[in-house]
Image (cartoon, rainbow, N blue to C red; front, top):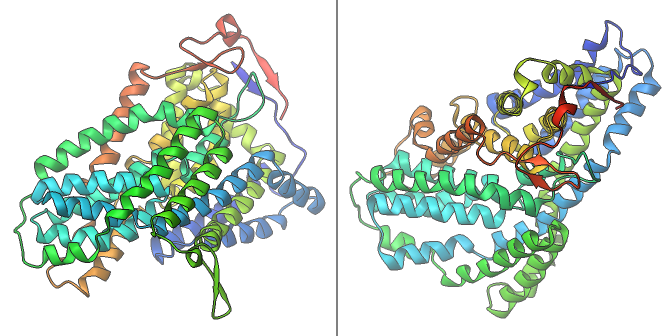
Length: 497
C-alpha cells in the first residue's frame, strides 16, 4: 500500500486538529448562506473562506509559517490553471447566454406541437442541451424555467415532473459540459502518476459520456411515460410564441466545434478559443448579435458578453483562491496527509473497488456539507480523491468521472439541504406572481421528480460494483484495462508531500 509521509512543518496550539478551524468556519458560512439565508453567491463563500483563514491564524504557533502555507496553497499550479480556464469559459458562457439557444428549442417544440409527457421529455432534452452548451446549471434554471415551465403546465405537463425535468437537464449539462465548473475542477484536481499534468478535459468528457447518456436516456423515458397528467389550458401557444426564435439553434454550431476541438486536441484553451471566435462570427453573420452585444459602454458602465461573462466568473475564481489557501494550511500541518492515510490504509481502500467507494462516499458527504454546491465540493475533495485514487493506480479520467458523477447524484436532490432544490422553489415562487395557475410544489416532490441524478447514481453505482469503465494508468499515462502495479501494490512506498 501507499503511505504518505506526514508533513508537520506548521504547528498549532492544541494540536494539528486546530488546523481544521478555517475549513470548519468556511463550511459554516456555506451552510448559513446556501441553506439558511438562501444566498447563492460565490463571492459570499469566498469571504467565508478568507474569514476562516484569518481566524485560524490565531491558533498557529508561527504566524509567518501559517501565512506562507496559505500562499503556497494559492500558488499551486493547479489553482492558476483552474482560474484561467474559468475566466476563459466565462466569456463563452456569456456568448451562449446572449445568443438565445433556449429560444431556439422553444421554437422547435412549438412547431412540433408537443403536449403532456412528450413536452416534459422534450423539456428535459432541451435543458440538457442548453446546460451543455452554456456550462452553467444555475444559469440554465433561471433561463429555462420562465420559458418552459408556465407553457408546459398549460400544455398538460405534470408540474412537479416538469420542474424535475428542468433541474435534471441542468444537472446533465453541469456533469458533462467541457466548460462547466464541475468538469473543469474534476479534471484539474486529478493528476497523473507517470507523467506531468492533470487529466485533460477532452479525455474526461469523452470517457464520461457513456455514463451521462445512459442515465439521460432512462430519465427521458420516465418523463415521457409519467410526465403528463395535467390539463391543457389556454394561452400556451401565445406564451411559447413570445419566446421563440429559430436562429438560436444555429448557435449549436460553435458548441459542436468546441466539443470536437476539445476531444481532438485535448486542450480546453484551444477548444474554448475556437468556440468563442466561431460563435461570435456566426452570431454576427446571422444577425443574432450586434457589435454592441460583444462589448460596449452604456451610461458609464461596460456591457456585452465579453465583460459580463468574464465578470460572472470572478466570484468563483476568488472562491478558488480562498479554498486553496485553506488547503495549503491543511497540507502544511499534516492534516491532509493524516486524512488521506486514514483512507488509503483502511481495509476498504485496499482494492480499486473499495477506493472508488471511498471516493463516492467522500464526494457526496463533501457536497452535502456545502449545501450541494458541486463545484466547490469537487475543488475541496478533489485533492483527497487524487491521492486515494493514485494509491491503487486509478486513471485520472476515472477519478475525475467518479467525483463529478457522484457529486451530481443524490446530494442534488436532498430536500432542505440542496441549494438546487431551493433555487427551483425560489424560481417557481417568482413565476407565481405572473401566472395564477402555477401552484406551490413540495420540495420532497421535486426531489423525487428529478430523475436524472437518481439514474446517474444507479449508473455509477453499477460501474463501481461491476468495474465497468474502470481504467488504470499505464506507464505513459494512458488508460489501460488492468493495473500494471502488480506486486508493487503490496509494497510500502513513501511519497514526500
